[in-house]
Image (tube, rainbow, N blue to C red):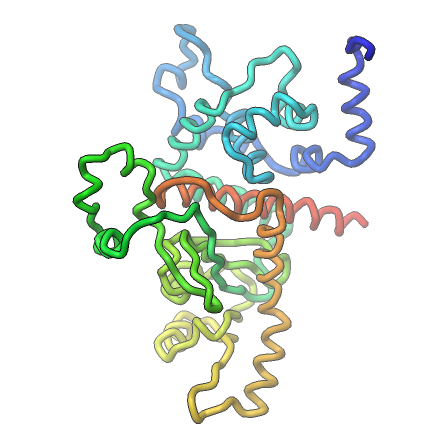
Length: 345
């Protein structure tokens, strides 16, 4: 095996570019500098903001944020993303790191994400990118589609009594003397059932526009929260069409009234009840609505089939909101690359 030459890395990168490295398209299309002020205001101390020359220099805030995006694009753990950045030329190029540069370790990345999560900054950065999408011509059009998807977390093996205490918002008495155990227990996630199967975790409630299939708003709750409870907060008054599409779980007399009062036009599926089957006209209307509503399944399908799937390996809803928010942002970034490729084809 020959020794690594001075220009070998450059040749490898040129070959990656020739094969169509997707990270290069992402690097080109995302306005990274627009995130800098928000991120630095949260993660840097007052001395660091003043560019003090004292002490060890922190890693660049945008480098760290790009590393989080890279992690979300591939659903990697903190240890895995550190390893992959060290191992893969395409990852280090995306971060602007040369071979001799220091690389943030997993602990540094964890601490950085903790600051963003506790400040609730991921939601603001998501909205910032949405403004960029609109500026590029990808405004919310064609109506809005509302739906929710379960995001599982590692299962907690609790007794029924312990689960009852957690659901009541209390910490089980037996845990109070075992602080290490409490730190490993997710006391915010909840169980739910879907199609006869039980799931433990959270829900990602999203609003996607029907035209571009971009996520415009999202909310994260525990998995036991009914889909319809987050509807009002997800509605987008900026969509150029006032149609609201959703499955029958969102239909109720109250919701229909609120939509009309807010100027929206309900396109929510109707559902049959006992001894009251849907008429042929209602069935036909549901089928027509499904042609548009089904587009949100493409959004969830893209997230499910992305590297690593959708499971979130965090503890607590604050961290889950940050991780799921980053996954939603990563989806929109990928979708922008696709839309741009379609536009130039």
